[in-house]
Amino acid sequence: MTVCVLAYSGGLDTSCMLGWLIDRGYEVHAVYVDLGQPGEDRQVMKDKATKIGAKSVRMIDAREELCRDFAFPCLMWQAKYEGPYLLGTSIARPLISKAILEVADEVGAEVYAHGATGKGNDQCRFQLAAEALRPEIKVYAPWRTPEWRQSFPGRTEMIEYCQKRGIPVKATSTKPYSSDENVLHISYEAGELERLDVCGVDLVDFTMTCSPQEAPEQSEEVTISFEKGRPTHVNGQPCSALQVVEQLNAIGGRNGIGRIDILENRFVGMKSRGVYEAPGMTLLYEAAAQIEQLTLDRDLVHLRDSLSPTVAEMVYYGFWYSAKMSALMAFIAKSHEVVTGTVKLRLYKGNIIILERSSPNSLYDEGIATMEAGGTYNQDDAEGFIRIQGLPYRVQGRLRNLGN
Image 1: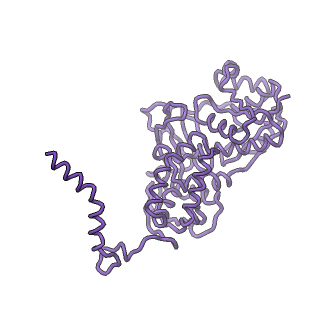
Image 2: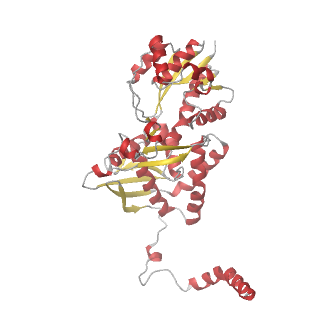
Image 3: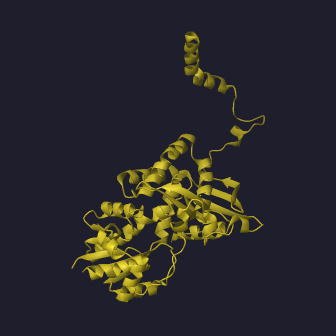
């Protein structure tokens, strides 16, 4: 009998897939990786998988690891895909695969099955992680097989199969969009959001954030502290990585922070529309940038910023476990050894206002920067500096004049 690990969510698709794989002779070990997504009671989900016939059911809490080892390194890179997208879904996928493949090692699995379709990015993220971490395992994506699509051309056929098989699922009407949630963010796509004449923020029932219009009339202040580029305190209180994100989700969410609506380019080549909310991470990206401005020198910041889109692309495409990414992560950890300090923000109806920033490693020297008399900067020094900078322009100018 072929041993298989299944990325199990407890929903209709993967519950159906669990039964379908067992019917085809697989010994299936269901693995649920908890990243902060809502859903049924975890014990209910575990009991359901056992009733379907799973050989074992693992419930793995990876929320802290997601924030500490995946989201915070991306934060240090200021990694954003195509502008505003903070990669909340993309960051989670390599961790899901890592956790599932660790179970595969324990149970001796030959196959890693997942419920990603052949049109999206997740199939790439899951499979590329498996190629890097356990290259000998076979990745099985039923949605990419004619056999699965013939058996289940739509949701109705899945529900009928589950009813016939005795698989307990909640057969609800289709929402006007689909959503995917973890502690970092919630993404909304498909359904009515595929129509570009629909206002996404009007259609979506956001759960992490209120609208800026409905946010309190009174502004709220929050302080965030960093050590070596990683957030460690909120309002002066030490926090774990998960606690930082959860507290800032609540604070940012009630002030209407962190909603975006974008048209993005998927790795497979098509454009897709996504609506996202990420209140806590939005606050962290802004606060981290303020400490970096204080503590990192110009050339280092410019180098990091030139590489940041590359890192965002690699995360989005699924190249987390590549040699290139390992080298880039080593670079960012070294560069951020001095990124320590505290930022105070004012939040008001979707806006983030910088109130204060401080760092023991600050490179800002008021005596040099001041426009008032008595500063330590000698303006006479600028004469020679600018003459040297202007040398090539004077040479080129003379040549142009000769040509005229």
